[in-house]
Image 1 (cartoon, rainbow over the protein chains, first blue to last red):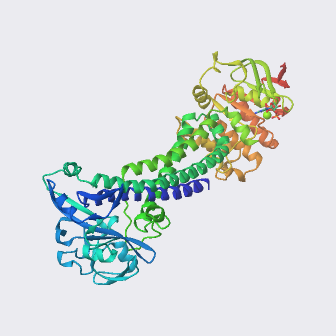
Image 2 (spheres, each protein chain N blue to C red; image 1 turned 180 degrees about the vertical axis):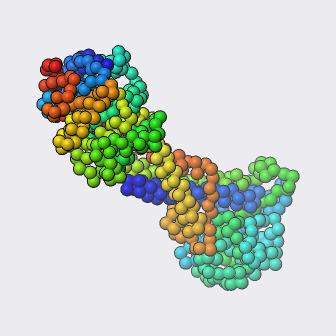
Image 3 (tube, helix red, strand yellow; image 1 turned 90 degrees about the vertical axis):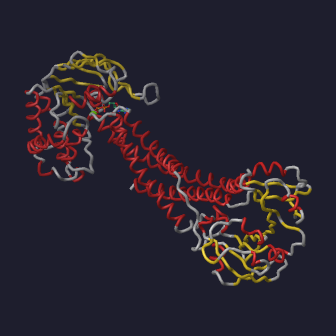
Length: 374
Length: 223
Ligand SMILES: Nc1ncnc2c1ncn2[C@@H]1O[C@H](COP(=O)(O)OP(=O)(O)OP(=O)(O)O)[C@@H](O)[C@H]1O
Ligand SMILES: [Mg+2]
């Protein structure tokens, strides 16, 4: 009975903790993967310390910097469909061959011919939510509340990272139209450097450009991770609550166990079982119990996150209320997280069961038996 | 031979509920004898028996086993010494109720260096001798008080210990069983074993070689 209570508590705690940790690892890995498909450098326009639209002719200045291979203007922003918000990215399709967004699951990516045609490539999350496939049309509402019809020509696969999941990629002409962006201005420039050049070197050469803010991949990665770092605070809180809860239950159980077994320990010591014999029994018991419950919890946590998209947790993890079944939450199991989950569950269990056993074992056997009988 | 010198046990020493349970007791116990501790309830019999049996640490005094002063030795040493030389029949019997009689009897053998399988024959012999063989596979909680006491005896004797400590071993049993127990204790003595027993049973006192009467923690007289 007492074992059942300990197992169930540990199971729930380790399931939740494993799901959170594995998903967090998965998201961090995805950030690393998706940063690799990001442009070598991104150039924004700073005015009075704020990011503003950048004049299109600035592209010529950037292209003049030694080592720059291509400068691709981009217009991007956010769009809503019912209660969801998605990222809309408009690319200059004439230099589309330089960009990379990861793999396409069905249909195709944009080509130079798609300029101004209303063709889009969308992420798995949007496809799932709107229940659309390649060949379908969708209506997006702009900020000026005008309906814009778009034609889906391609779908990102979810292997291409969670960062494409809520993405809508279209030609820059369509994006300008959609956002009512003034002619001659764009949001930023994606810059690709020559193969023989280091992005950092090129960035250094660009530092003389007026009003330019240059972002490299490291900076982007730090940005992604910082976004999850903020959520990391929630992880830590969640961890703490679960573990303190689990430890408390384990401890209260151990006290009961300690009381129940005090008599037994006194008896065994009278018969000549040594203190070490007695601790060994408890140690093996709680190790077996701990490893069993923790391992099972990890498996359940993995299944819960990887196959069921962690309902109830994704909101905390990603800020989305739920994920459609078509979409797979990125889940990754590292040795570090497995080890730390074992450490934080098994160690408190061992302490809370072995310490009372040890205290009983060093009591005079007669007193241990007498006090327990009374 | 066991020798006690100035054994005193004070429970809760220095606290408001301090109890002097045993006070300045010295005695010698010869090997191959039956030694009885007797006296009114609360006079310290169980306390003294536990001290001699090395399961309770006295507040002061010394105990010698065959001339060796043992109280200063480690817990590990005392535990090993108990395992190799002692058998206990407790006043409150102290069997584990959720196990069978046989399992209880074999329990002491699971401590180091013995194989329970080697002792099955002896267990059966002792259980039969005490008339509880047909109860061997019953849970202890289903046995009567007298049956439990006899099982406790078998458990104490399973390893054929040199020293047997028995605390009021005949209170729960009928006359027939009592006689079996007297016979058993005498047989053990004849084999050179030492039996230290606390009792009020006049018949048991009759077979004693040495009787120590106690009152309020002190030894009264010697026979
Ligand atoms: N753990 C303890 N803490 C405090 N006092 C105790 C403890 N154990 C025993 N005593 C007290 O010590 C005294 C001697 O107790 P003990 O059990 O040795 O007596 P006894 O002679 O065996 O009595 P009985 O014939 O009733 O079994 C009693 O007054 C008892 O209340
Ligand atoms: Mg007593």
